[in-house]
Length: 475
Image 1 (tube, rainbow, N blue to C red):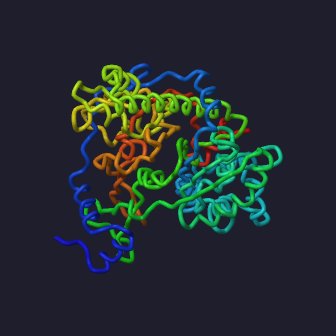
Image 2 (tube, rainbow, N blue to C red):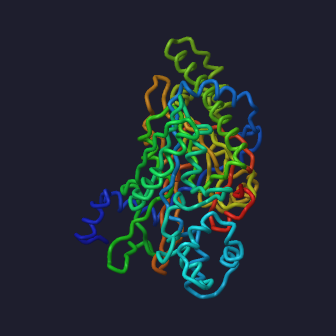
Image 3 (cartoon, helix red, strand yellow):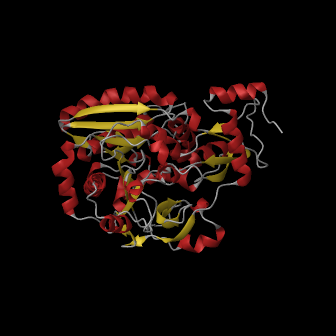
């Protein structure tokens, strides 16, 4: 049965998709994705390295000027979910815990002065919230997190975007240049450019660096169609098909266009004020130092394989122990070594929702390390999930070049069958959405991966507005 009219097909083409791709997505909604074949949770010294010592930091500092370094910051999303409870209060008129907390602590927020400048005389509680999150005032509910005032200092405030610029200068510079790439929604591009123009001259002068800022948008062709609960195409009130971003995994195409030797990845909302940043800078450098050393060893082995002088047993041992891939004697060690490398900083699981590092068998039966989301785990393996002690990566250091100095095509290292279906809503109507594959899991499934424990202080995400009141966000 054909679901699509001529206007639907035109809409699909305008979205840079094909009818075959959309039909495959509809098929995937019906069949679902295969569960990850997890065997056990990764633990310290069993797939996870303990926290790194200062030798790795020193190695990075001594060698960073030899590398082209880029900090990659996913910053596309609007902050709507961050203010969900505040929107609920405006819609219902019923006070909730989060909204009351915001009102009680208003002066502690970095946006307080900006908000006051928009408020009418004798503003009510409703006025305050309305002027914070709607276009009656600051319109924070429609802005990206990058442009929100995050942190309050004695004589100034800083947005999340500004904090990433400062942080980038602290560990991601090479020869005095700080390259930072932001993924941005098209509608927010002007806001980013305007704010960057305001702050970059000051930071370059104060820090003695030169910023090279680039931006890209998430490609429409990476979106997926939404469906009703019976898996038929979901339609908006005007009868059009609904396409949704397929999660962070869609950004692998953006990452693939970055020309760099080392890429640091960190989400826009995972940033702390300067006074709390010592651990972040230390462990970023340490992870990169380890990445440099492992990559150097891989390159040495690749050259030995080329010249016929390689010790195959030594290489197999390196793959088994350092890269965490339990291979058989007939495995092609060249194919395994010749992959992009990522070093993932992970933290102890404190109850946050999300995935973690597990030992997983691939389609060929080989055992290796992967990040797995709860939705990817079969019900009979939930006990294994519960035994996991660590959370998904909070920091990733990528080495995207091969031993000949050429960039890998990252699109060739994706597991297209890694994904999951979730339930969402649009205009109050329930729908099913597809996320495939996640950036940390499916989109990087065929990378060589090393997990390293980092402290909880390196993970300070802002998921709801009240997170900005936590001690980790106080200067």
